[in-house]
Image 1: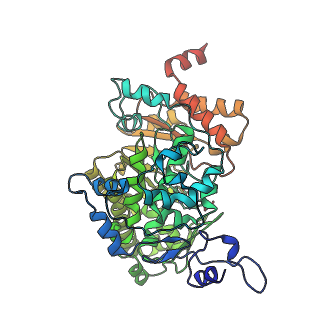
Image 2: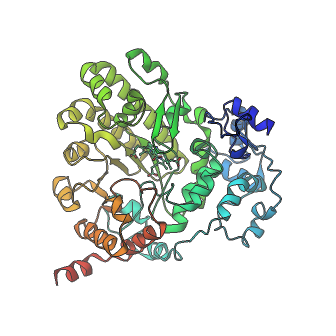
Image 3: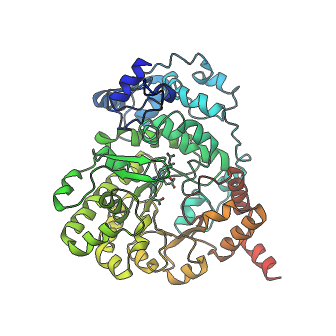
Amino acid sequence: MQEAHQRCRRGLDVSFVDRRQCREPSTGEHRPVSLKRPQLGSEVGDLRIPAREEHQQARRGPGTEADDPAAGTRERHRGGGADCWNLSVPTCSDDATTDPGKRESTDLPPVATTGPAYGARRMACDQAVRSVDVVQAPSRAHSAAIDSSPASAQPSLLAAYRGQPTDHVPVWFMRQAGRSLPEYRAVRATATLMEITHIPELAAEVTLQPVRRYGVDAAILFSDIVSPLEAIGVDVEIHPGVGPVIASPVRSAGDLRMLRDFEPAEDAPWLAEAVHLTVAELDVPLIGFAGGPFTIASYLIEGGPSKVQARTKALMLSDPLTWGRLLERLSEIAIASLTAQVRAGAQAVQLFDSWIGSLAPDHYERHVLPVVRRLFERLSELSVPRTYFGVGTAHLLELMAQGGPDVVGLDWRVPLDIARARLPGSVALQGNLDPVACLAPWDVLETEVLDVLRRAPDRGYVFNLGHGVLPETSPEMMSRVVELVHGYRREQALAEHER
Ligand code: CP3
């Protein structure tokens, strides 16, 4: 108890010990804890965060990483080398989680069980997850079909992103890992969001959860668009039900100083590690992501989520020089983050510029598009499909395509057939079921999904929602959506529709 309070005072969350222990001694009330980034070399509950040198030492590992960047990491997790995490979870006596053989007998779906240290690190979250009845996707039959199909030498997601034919419509959901999943909530009850992102095993676990449950065609790394800011020392916290909150917002040219270069290997070693662990377990591609420059700028300037983006637009219009420098810096940060994710194994990237829809076309074209264009140009060096997504962008679609992405992500406000007619054929589409439809009874939802599919192009298309999965969504409904999308055969459906 005393120890937990000391941790509270040091600004560390105590959730790995027991949230209930973090109470004000006099009143017994739960004490708000500042969720600062756990310092390298410090402890969070029973987890010890490795010091930078330890991390680097461990990354050098026994394998050479020159040819295969994941080699050292994978080797280490097989138990073949020094491990960077010195962990003990004394309260957990169940060795089933550390012994791959015994794990089979638990009701947790098989996940990366590579090496005793890895198993031990996962114990806390394993125990939480195990209490949840996780339904797995039915035998992932569609991935077998992909492998045997000559039309799909590559995963269907990547083929669709590249405008090539696929034998089924690929599908994934923005925010598929998150509060709609009981298994995510179980992990989240043991760790803050930032802790999950800083502990590669937890990040990999929650990234894999929706893939196991739904059998979707992609995983998207569990992180947040503000994570790189936090990694370079910006005081940002994620408030549940609100979003990112910045303690000292950017208000002048001088404030740009807080945005130093982001060097993922130094500033966020957990990022590549989480990607390595995740891709080692995946049979579908992992999508890496970053926040778009406008959207991140809006959080930095407003200090948090905002409906009208008043301060953001005021700075953009009144001080274009500072605005341009801010967007350039944020663009560099996004490039660094996406490059690190791809080098570690992500096979596609998505830029979430969620709030660009608040801009007039002319303002977007003058004040945002040039930076976005350069950003996508730089990302082309990564040779992976690049998606550009925004909300409420019906008036910006052509301009977004001019930014040079391979795929444009659409919300529900533009029917897919209309978007297809407006955009160049070389650009693939992703979207765009209204997430609210997933709260409706199945017959209503089914009609909505079929309507999206009927309007979708026959190639160069990935099914998704028009924005993130709402927390109150039933996972059973999302499973049925995946089944419906995977079973959809376009010609047959169109013929039936016409009859
Ligand atoms: O929603 C948007 O488009 C706004 C911008 C944005 C945020 N995070 C800010 C934010 C975007 C695109 C993200 C990305 C994100 N955040 C991802 C990747 C994208 C994907 O498709 O999965 C992930 C995995 C996260 C993780 C995340 N952030 C979760 C699960 C939550 C919920 C809170 C929790 O504690 O579990 C957040 C908080 C968050 N980040 C919010 C916003 C606007 C919402 C705040 C809330 O409703 O609680």
